[in-house]
Image (tube, rainbow, N blue to C red; front, side, top):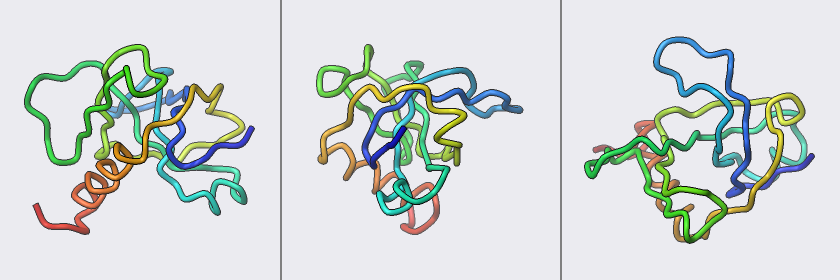
Length: 117
């Protein structure tokens, strides 16, 4: 299986500990495509459907009607994970629009401390 930056994939995140996002859930591939083509792992951020009106700067709302998600979801850019493509990704659902990836990039900058809040 191959993945590309911006893909929405179903990822088996377990086993986890503490407050880490768990279970089998959609995740967004955020690793660059050179890494995706040449490494056995990729970097993802999980989605959640449990969210309120207020969001942190490191969370991005992704409406279901613009991508392959069943429900409106939030990309949790504070929960970055490196996962095995072969062992943890079960399928690719589609991708998010570039406009949404631009928002994710900004949220990742906040999450990683590359841009001050």
